[in-house]
Image 1: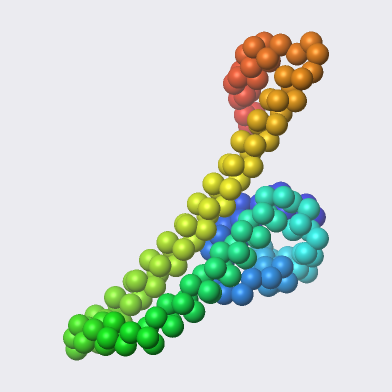
Image 2 (image 1 turned 135 degrees about the vertical axis):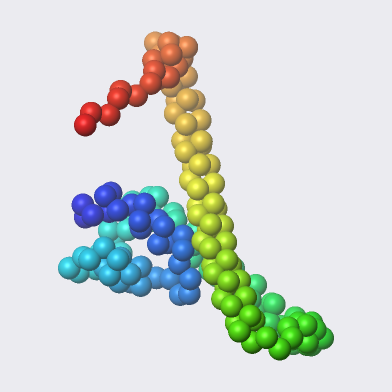
Length: 164
């Protein structure tokens, strides 16, 4: 579908900020709402684009890992009840301030999670691009008649200016 290249950054941002269960169907519904599409895109539309598929798979794994960590944290809270009681006893009686602090902490945690996910995706994407570059360089070296020094000087020329 033509909408994917035009909205790739939006799609990746939605994946990076995703919380809760993630499936291609849920992502398609979210994109339909966000982008105002007449019908949701198919799973195959996403899997045609390596960058989107990779981001989706990475986020899915992060969500699985986060779920297992949450289970472990819950188990440790039950095993050590004094941690939770210490937190509750230190809160005080100002309910409005506590509620506001909780909202701020949740907002910061969500933003931190989104940024962390984006960072992991970008690091992974960078590794893939570096690997591709090394593979191209190796294959060019094996070709007869290719002068790598001349090729580097040609490739390092700047891009042409954007036309308005």
